[in-house]
Image (cartoon, rainbow, N blue to C red):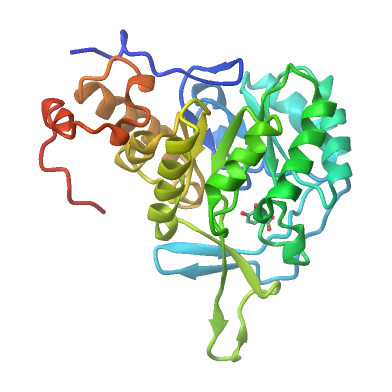
Length: 329
Ligand code: DHB
């Protein structure tokens, strides 16, 4: 049996190496300042920052959040300081924490993504760029680039061209499509080194007192455990057609067991998002629990477990000491 010192927990996206496969989910930890009170940011794989736009944005009208069964609906509207302030303040601060940094970018046009990529190109200390082409809280569905293969390709090609070959690109996709594998193939052939699966699902809550939509922005992005089976399905489908492409899996991960499910489906990394709001240490808990589970199942490395659920020989699971952990929370 392997132990914590011989087990290889590392993961890779493009040519960038991460000591652990745990990432914050974009938007759920801003630029990491609040989380740093609870654990050293250098102990997780990377901080994925809130999607940054070219200009400062105030976001959508309030209310911006609603509780939903086993989840949360939000409509922030990409509030943020804009790329200039982000590069002046947030990146230098993250570097003082020795955090690995994945910068999430968001644009309203193909050109805006390319301009953001050009700004990041020469910034030291960036481990990867996550291209958020799937924010649901935009003025019209035509701006959800990830719902259309041609638009998805155009954004990723532009970013690839302007950012150069040194910084890996991760495309963040939406589950709100007929066939997510079609979009995944398109962005990978356009130059994405990895994929983040999945962004929030488009949802709505109606306030039965006012008899109007609860959120100021009317619709919002659904996250939390309610979407986990959708996310696991997306990771499984995409890993099946693109087995060599690293996937960061996310959607309702609260425990090491949840994270293990994504790894078995084909994720090489996992993000914790909504759970952070209730428990700022959730990502550290998931990290410790996932490592323990992988070791106790007899894996020598994380990479051995990636996509294990795709194997034909299901008796392998029994040989790895599967017990009565089928029930779940
Ligand atoms: C926002 C962006 C997202 O990508 C998401 O999934 C949810 C909310 C936003 O800023 O509104």
